[in-house]
Image 1: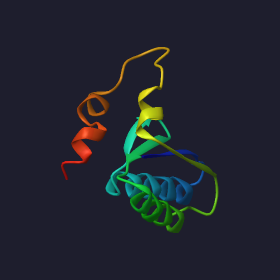
Image 2: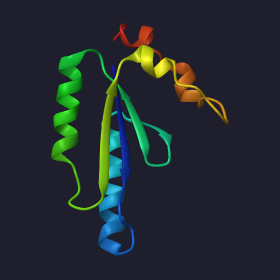
Image 3: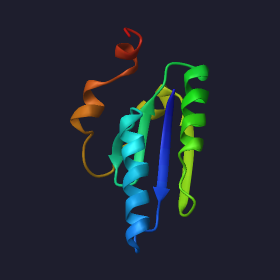
Length: 102
């Protein structure tokens, strides 16, 4: 399964920029990879792990902004079409078969 997080946070004030950086750092430290600006994805092995990381995400939300989360299967993620551009190097390296080795 995959968790995809979409966010749009205010960055006008210095404190808002700091909170943006903290949230982004949380995502990276928690195993999310940047798909596009303000779109991060995390590979999870099953429903229990997905629920655990959704709870961690919920506990780290900033007070302001717009944050959305979508949980999809790996097969659905693989069916994503690139209209312009190509998958990143990280997206080509990691797939569901490699996750089952851990």
